[in-house]
Image 1 (cartoon, rainbow, N blue to C red):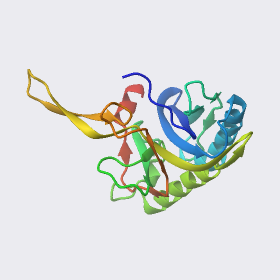
Image 2 (image 1 turned 30 degrees about the vertical axis):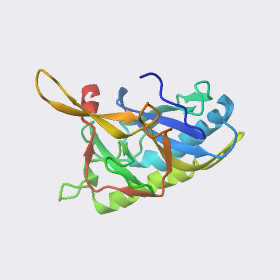
Image 3 (image 1 turned 180 degrees about the vertical axis):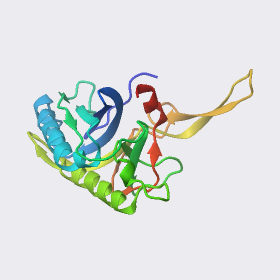
Image 4 (image 1 turned 45 degrees about the horizontal axis):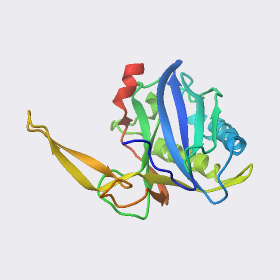
Length: 230
């Protein structure tokens, strides 16, 4: 259906991870800004804050075989919006036995808007075997620790960077009702296809929701596609 629509006053941050040098996954976050759109230099200042805060707040949550391998950020307000890339490599400092590559910690984000379906969340390659309780869940102390680490990391990215001002973490919703129900004529199987909000018959432009709260999950999460890169 073509490129996604513009989202005024929002930047998208992709944080890249690797295990023993192999690509692992991205953690994607969105931030809302109140100033004029940032240029490349502004976003470069933002990424300097990102890798500085990875070192101070996130590296203690992942072990040395896991690495932050840089990040990129872009302004979503126009197709020609500012962009910047960081290639800094930061190994984790947590001691302990590495878990399976798909293993990750989950942070759920609360927003004011209620809707049916998945809610905003992010996955982080945190934890070692010693952080797993006898119950098979993350230990309570580790949940508190990594939740606080992500909260601090995000809060340290709220502020002024060059010429633009970030005021909140947010989520962007490109899809919404009405959904289409499609049936495969040969198999009879039914699948639901979401409608882009800006499509004919959709509900309008993308929605931006400000993140209100962060909650770490005790459940040990998995992104199985990561195993293909292990």
